[in-house]
Length: 219
Ligand SMILES: N[C@@H](CCC(=O)N[C@@H](CS)C(=O)NCC(=O)O)C(=O)O
Image 1 (tube, protein in one colour):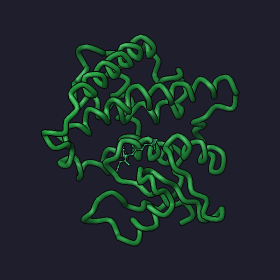
Image 2 (cartoon, protein in one colour):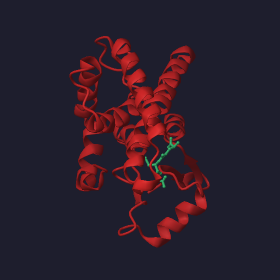
Image 3 (cartoon, helix red, strand yellow):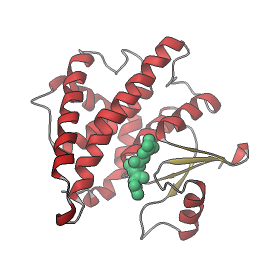
Image 4 (tube, helix red, strand yellow):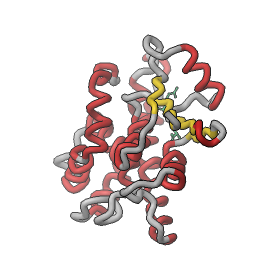
């Protein structure tokens, strides 16, 4: 297989990249990392050599001199450029593309980062928790959700009728954020959007693959 994706099925940023793969049925090999009991040590070494930062997903393209591509957004950009499919996750129009990238940053920075902070704090030892940081993360998540509630305004997807990279970015932090603090009652539009995302076959598939690992989620 030409494309190798170093990823874990439970990881929210891997979901973002997986949605892009599944939207266009792009073939790839899933290289499991991040599970000490199941990760092949050779795969882990390969992954750490590629990207010592140690965060997944990371893509390796063996058809292009083993180019490696870290960061979910950049992986989606790479697929759009080198392995385009029927669903154009980055529009051709430069202004539309810039708006998609802006929404991608919005979802990553103001929903995804706070969601990770809140979850990450739960698995810290009790004496190393960061209530001040978590409080800030909750406020940021809530502000971004308020903005999304207004912005989505009955649109099927973040940018309107077209499903784009912005929707790949939106699904995971909304899904995990809603598990932390359900928002169906407080943010019905954002919740209906999450439901559409979860029913979309690409994200439904990524979630199905994550199911066996849900027991590992911090309570
Ligand atoms: N900026 C990265 C973030 C990736 C990230 O945070 N990945 C998490 C999983 S969702 C991870 O690798 N966690 C493992 C670790 O930090 O050791 C991206 O956009 O892909």
